[in-house]
Image (cartoon, rainbow, N blue to C red; front, side, top):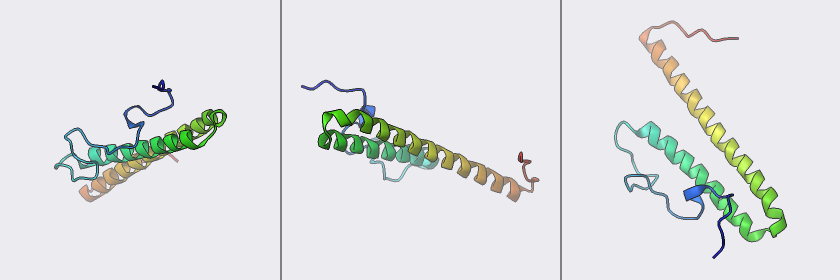
Length: 113
């Protein structure tokens, strides 16, 4: 058996179906009150699965000496994708908060220039 390298993504290292904690599939409807958390987790799991599949594919098709550089490049893209998702989610929360405050009649929040 081959020793596992440290280049994988933990439990997302292989191609398989992903299930939530309650045994639901990632795309299934979430119970009320957990839509935001579930969709965030589902999106993060999808990103992790995509990049795990990319790693598995490159390990099969590239020569051994090219694998470390390719793994580093894919890991950098993976981190960038997760950072972009977090930033987008943050901007969505700020926008929703500002809309709620505006509907409630509060003055707009002062923003630094």
